[in-house]
Length: 271
Image (tube, rainbow, N blue to C red; front, side):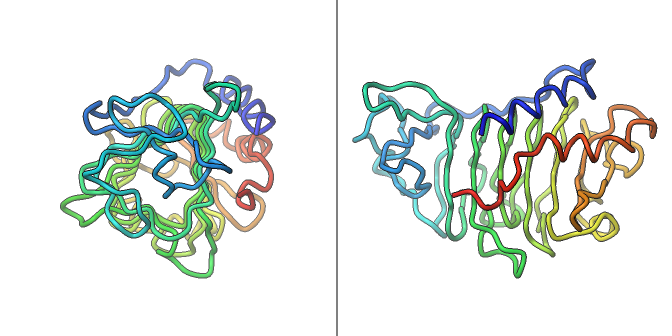
């Protein structure tokens, strides 16, 4: 994991050194549960002992409050933070979290927020043969979940469904579905975002034709290909969506290669 993030750091400095960090997600402490990764092997997203509830200290026997559950395909009625894990068997030491593989739909209650930050890696078992099987979703278009990916975090998912998706800082998202990648899920790109969204199964022309771009925003303004976002080939039949810091095309030729060098190879096959 370290080679992935160490390679991305100089890339961000090289391309976007003049930019300041973007928007940060905030959750109410009263509703917040935090990833601890206590159950061996410590990565099961639906293992309730892997989450620490309000007022609890990190530890192997902690659980979310009794008024909610962490189950696949059922609404999770908490704000959730995945940022660090506690895996030192001689004590508890903060380390970047790894969650997954996640099987099934990660269903978040409407208005509740999943924040993936730090150097966390949230890995869902994905396959480009269909859509929706490994989605992060909310209840409805009028009551969406909120998904925020920030810092140097990495999220692998098949698609989003009925969720507000926010990216900032150097966050990297990998999407494996050939259709419906942001299904009724508006995308908000923060000022200063220097990461990428990689569509593994879609070419740049295919991504350009998807309706999610019609409602995507960049620092609050409508997303516009060639003006504030670019769609670059990943050199493997897929696409990298990046933010353009200013209307300039001189950097675009090298950005695709630099971003691919910054990616950790084989991330989609991790478990």
